[in-house]
Length: 427
Image (cartoon, rainbow, N blue to C red):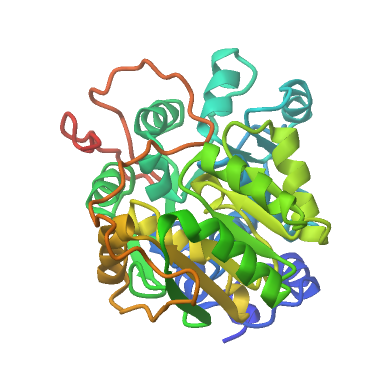
């Protein structure tokens, strides 16, 4: 199948061709046709499989084929959980709409709102946003969602994990009930399916790969190691392998800073990226990592979604996530677009339970290696480490009630439905 067979406009096909894409990915093949038909879609695809284009291309096609000739209200809203993901999606929107008469903008917290507001006042068709800044600007009367025709909830499971349920409810109340709704994510939990039931109307469910599977192109390995020897081991692996671009995940912000400092002390250029970093610092660190001036980017799970780094060869879990689904998202930063990648995990005794949960989720036993001089401590307890709060994101300080929310609706004349009270309250 080619992009030409999907029914997209010539302007979009030209933009896709310019990016060097010739064949749509499985999620694009399955999602684009029903979206073009105006149907609500619930889509699941592992990260790195092109799901952003799966909703961006048909969204832009509809807007360009049905222009608003009088003025430019915001007609499409793409809601994402993190700043990095918002910026990435916005870049894709700009690239794909290069040959269309459409305008777009991105808004997120951590930066001055004035340039964002100025862009919106010029008139835009597509808005990419994180919940906190979106609600803030709407509360100030600086934007309106009353003319939204297409609503996209990207990385919906991450939204719930970060506590954005009430914010999502508030955003939905601000939009017209008649609209098309698209929900995309790498995984779908029971809570996500409850949320989908309240927002989507008779959705077409598409799935490019089994839920929670990991990309086949990624080579995965576990290094069993004593907890106190992890820093020495990771420095040895990076130095001996002469690795030039490594994304490392830690469980906490403090841990990211501490490891970054150790790396720099060992003459390995490194930078940390997490929720306590300013947006400017995060942008600078990511830019340095992409251009090669920084070899190692140490991140918390805020970076597990939204980091689009072409041909990233190595991902290392310095600490395993305590939520197994996050392992899938972390290692999904490598092995993208068919490229090969390597995902390594340094596992101490107190992470044994986390490793077992991950292997159960991905339905595979990960190969284990022990390096001489960095052996695991045979006397260490296997009791799980204390779970940490998730860090990062742009969560707003929402105080709205969690009662009934008017959700649902699409472009057709189908009436919206009101879910039962607390139909999708987070457990």
